[in-house]
Length: 476
Image (tube, rainbow, N blue to C red; front, top):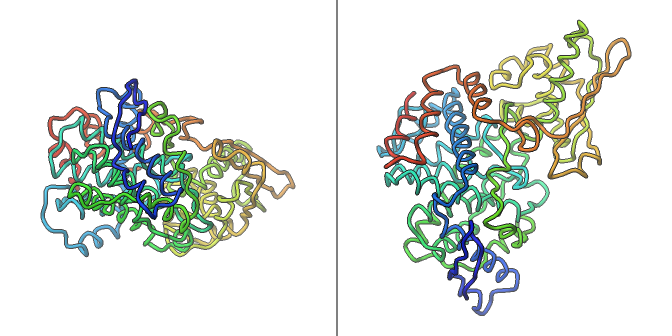
């Protein structure tokens, strides 16, 4: 079965490798998933760097800069050294960013992915309801480094990884309680790695279909409880995507439209139409958000509103001791993050009371904010934070992710501030290169490390070979 699809100004006819759609035993949902995947794989197989619009190229460089900087930041957490040691990684050509270690493709992909998400500061996409870049970039970069692929091919594979993951994120609606790490995004890692391995549209389709049969059914409660397995789901996603691409390259992968029964059915619902909407016209990477707070994206509008109120308090000569009550109203998914106690940093980053209290006391929500969260003053204020859901905020999703914060003061006054979207969203104060530099400089506190990330992000898309470009990121 051939499909004709529009692609960045060109019309290409591809054989998506979905002849299995006519096999006995494949139900209509599987066939629909295969047909949509065939069109998406045709687009991915035909994509070339010189056909990518300049604004999309620049956006990729910015996402790379954020990815490199945040991964190095995560690698500096005290527990990361012990984790790398526990892996006892074999020598190889691929850097584990910020550690001084170079190892195998799979070990580097896993360790870089988990470092990237460990501080909740990696780029995300509200329309995909998750993190397309983190699901595939570590795998693609590790494979490209091992192969010493040229920059244009690597950059194209990264874009394919992002766009495929984002579209599978749009197509998937997880069952209540499912965390988005490690399920729909594995398709991006598979697509990007398959592209890097030189597979055609049929091979990419086989890799993506295989990967969509490898999702993790991770409970959202893991994040709330501070269970570190939540970060490991992202490492598993990247390595599973690599495995799926290798299966396709070996000719073993057999596409059956399995996403209809894995992402759909077992884990929620799956709408394959979303895989091909505005295909070749809309770039989801341009619709992503950057994070200035070390916390779950659900907490960011609450943090932004709180910071605005903190400034008002300071102008009025008031302090946190003048606050008797804090009430946060936000959309339902965010309102579930209302715990006033947390076991560790991960659990704290998924608590709106923690984030609001940190914003009030510190004027920022940075990784080091957790250090004093067990102090009596902090705990007392956090206990006064109430989080409720508001139907008005639910009605605006996914285009707007908002929150309103109210501070009741000892004199009876109520201060209120509402935000429609968090800072850094594509729809509200989106980050540019300079703002990203300012943020990373503040977080890293290391001009040399920042410059390495800047140089790598700028040089990679045009490099003759990416290995030497990426290896400098291994520097401690």
